[in-house]
Length: 174
Length: 61
Ligand code: FES
Image (cartoon, rainbow over the protein chains, first blue to last red):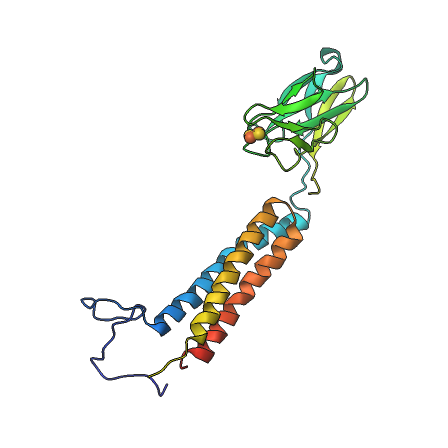
């Protein structure tokens, strides 16, 4: 490269390539531009994992089947009552509500606002979050009042030989 | 020597767009609009060559 200054020593007092550490550093115009290009690089690289995870979700790898898990026996769950369980993992709180003879709904009951446990209020016929009084529609899991903006993730259930089983977590369309 | 600060301005605009795209990307991810996430991710990535090109073009100005 022709433009390179190969005289030694040469005054280098800018921010990006100062050799003499005793000098006060100055951020000159070109050094600032280099910093900006570097920042663009950092942004680009740090975008990659988000893109990768999004692509993975899109290809349906996130939609996995979990081993079916028994939640409750039919006789122990009167109509209008709810029971809490864990699905799919040991730490994923969920709630099953029996709405009718053959009608069950189940949601992961970590509030979509700040993850407080949402519970079922039979008298009011809605799901309530105690923390900031968020409310959710029991039929769909959609937020109806308070801070939450996203629906509760629904869990598909299956009735089999007098017991209710959790089958999979439904992906919701926002 | 009178210099031009057009490069600084353009690169600042790139940084500004980077911030906006990142913000959108993360939000769209949590809203589970994965296609939008990918779009903003791609935009963020092409900003780097653009920034590099702008730097090359304007560093001597
Ligand atoms: S955590 Fe549920 S409303 Fe805030």
